[in-house]
Image (cartoon, rainbow, N blue to C red):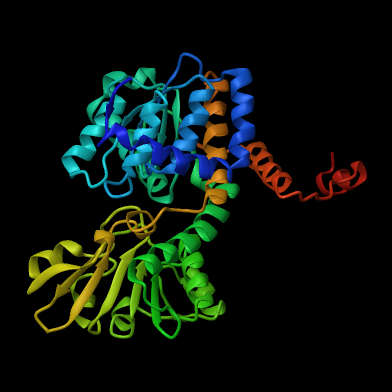
Length: 413
């Protein structure tokens, strides 16, 4: 067992957090029981880079129960919870993650979980897979395949695949229905506002909220903002999504036009330079900006740091930047994922579904290692169906099934 964590003595509070989510993640409990009986990962090393908090810890323990030798790190320097990392080390797992790590420390921890020669890679955002190809090509023959958790990571994988550089199979977990339809929309929608509200302690009702991006994450954020009483503006580059936002009842406009109107801005595009110096300079005094995309490149915080007249902490996780025009702009969580940098991430019940997809997809890679053709693989429909049925059963919900005659009528077989 090896680790790079802050303090092993914090493990008890981390264990309580893990127990709390365990009590609210029945799907992983059922999958863990299956894994204990079948040991699908016996003799295999799993490298995991996901936000190091309690729900992720529950996934790690589930995989370990299935025989995996776990090497875990975070995927964001501000989302690690040190007590949770300590609790996993106390359980005998190899963990390398520290809250507030520098980029050098963060990347060193990624290297630590890769240098062991993993057989399965569980990634969130693509940093682990990218670094594996860049610095550890000699270990790639050990890799059976991997699973990618989020939209940003899948975009990076598709770019690698187009370039012909992706060297092993990857399961596109985020594209599974039981992941993106619920995690991205309901999980992001709730957890982003949990983070904003807890951090600012300000009212949302009556404010003008600008949501950049109307994918499933943006839809969830906009929906919850509307429910909290905000007037919602959506900015988009995709005309179809912009039309959808308009028909959902939101004002749609360019970011340049929205910038002077907004009280609170949330980016959720997966792209960079969504809010630049031009928009920051045109915002009203006291405007608040935060990011719900994976990387801290959507709001140009670097420009603020170099051009602000003054800069200081207004409140924990809130930085105040006074600009040359006399106005102050506030940034939450350093422009990193606000629901994790300034919150606890998605609700446990949502991550139960997402991590059930992860666990079952990892098992699928092992079971089909000899017949996987190509590099990018959608999660099989039977895994999606399995997770949905498990979730419904945990709620005590029963649904109809097709009769043989109905099946023949629809499918012709």
